[in-house]
Length: 196
Image 1 (tube, rainbow, N blue to C red):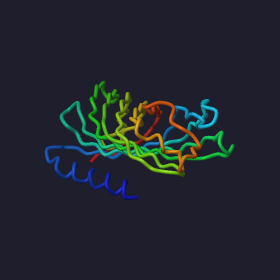
Image 2: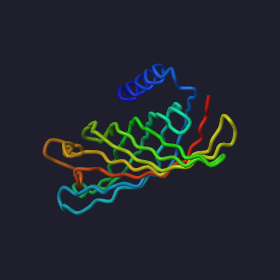
Image 3: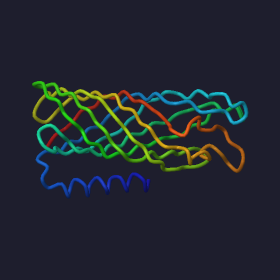
């Protein structure tokens, strides 16, 4: 809960300090996330992870006619079956990123390209850890009115997990291990933007 409070505080400070912004936006998202696999601690073979629903929201502010600044939060929960105890385990990943968004307008349709940096918070049965993370996205917007827009997006996350090898371990017993030093996930999402 402290993690969410910190992100909301930072978001509020960013928006409050951006007095030159002429327009703000709030967008709730829902979608589906495709994930990397984990490795089994005993077999060393890949353990399949469920691809699951994700949800999140963003706060954005207009930074000129074709650009935005954005704070994005996104959460997904995954399940996997461990080769250690043959049981199903779960873990959550929460992403928090500051993004720059370029907007390419064609009447009411807008194509967006976004790049961002921030962190990924992993919360497992055994441990939790925050690691650095980058994100990139390609999206579309359809402006239904001056206040509302329908948003679609494909977004990829790359999180540096080389120092997080103990995430799935209690003492020397591990239900799984990260397969690489970079954790990759891709989400397909839709949302509804409210502007004021």
